[in-house]
Length: 493
Image 1 (cartoon, rainbow, N blue to C red):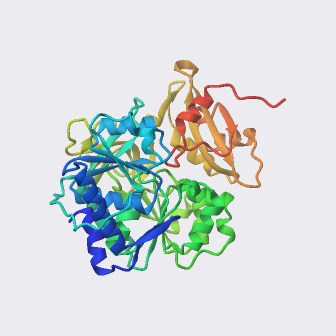
Image 2: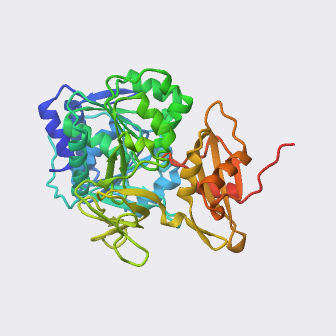
């Protein structure tokens, strides 16, 4: 089985059913199948062959979904780049993965001309489609399916290589957990370059369900997102917690009855503060699931939220192993962490990436860099990033723990902690966004921290900031906050 076979099979079972829809229209499964074959024939004429890479640079649309399928049918791998990315980044990625072609819309083609390596073809996603025979190049589970570029620590994007086998191990697992049918309507909130979109697209295709592409301009437009959830009669929602939080705080999500059709809400990418999660659980009877895993493993653990979880004073667990993976924690001394102990989370199994493009293949265990606490029963609590562990005046401080305490304050919507300065001058700075209608005071927040944390973990400086800055995936932009923390805060006259 390969990813493109999911659409082929769905088209055979439910040809007239809606497969994917966006602001400019939709495609049935039969139409998506035919469009993919037509695009595949066009790419083949441009020289795309099995094992090649094809960059996709455009706003989310049914045509881009068809392009993904076209690339896969040729045995090639697609490389999605967010439509809002600048030309320089697109060219950098295309050069890095030695792309055979770049598919984009006609208005963008002139901007790329001269930016790509000689021999890199350009294909117009807006070009008319002509019927073509079915294309189905023989593909193995170990063949590359797509490359997702993430921000590298050096500032250069890193290409995470995922095979058909990697993706299908996750898709088959997620299909079994969500249990969708052909009448389900999946909302695709995440950009295609973000691994959350893999569930939206391929779990829906496996079930013969429909995917509803949230337009990029609505991604963090609270009121419009709430309207979209209702008007599209979404049954399965998957996003970063931040999207749900802004819908609750600023979009009036909780002021309207929960849609009866909505049966599953999944979230991943960052901890969900417990206070707004309690409100979400009180609002809807839908299943709530916390999925965890870096891009390099997709989802490797999950936890379905229970009533008991909502009595905690910290985010819900990241749960137990998923997708057929083996997951464990290793202490700083190299031993396996036991119940109640903390350590770095390690993953081994079918969803672990093939490697980073241009680097030696990855084999075996992947070290996530995330710190967890082992729970009774084999589950895990997320503690924070290993690289978010900082030293403040000789004491080890986990930034995630400071954030969790602050977010448990009734007037705090979300919070982020960063270290500013170096050596003995290192300061702990926290940023807090107030809940609507509340008036946050920095002294009150410092007092709250001092009541719940040892003295060395109490922030040197508290700043009120709303909203907190976001990166392209909707997560809190910590580098931007660190840069802000390094500057003195402007005082009101």
